[in-house]
Image (cartoon, rainbow, N blue to C red; front, side, top):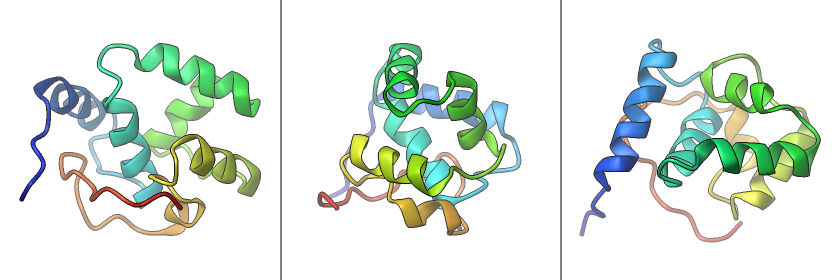
Length: 110
């Protein structure tokens, strides 16, 4: 049975699609964007908390999603931990064959 997607989550992903119109630069970026989108209006607070936790700027997190590079191994591992494995370290090196609006399947904890 397909999981329903909340309209707020879809709206957030629509904003990501506008900011990065060429599509996800990697599977890691797509999964990270979907993970953030679930925080309905609090994405900036979550980004600030994550940035502080792993020692990067909020702009760095934004760039990772929108195609401004790939995270270091340490940052990728921290993101994997903070997202409970929904975004794995190896995802950043994988090409995404789906667009922004295609929801990634949920994963068991990594």
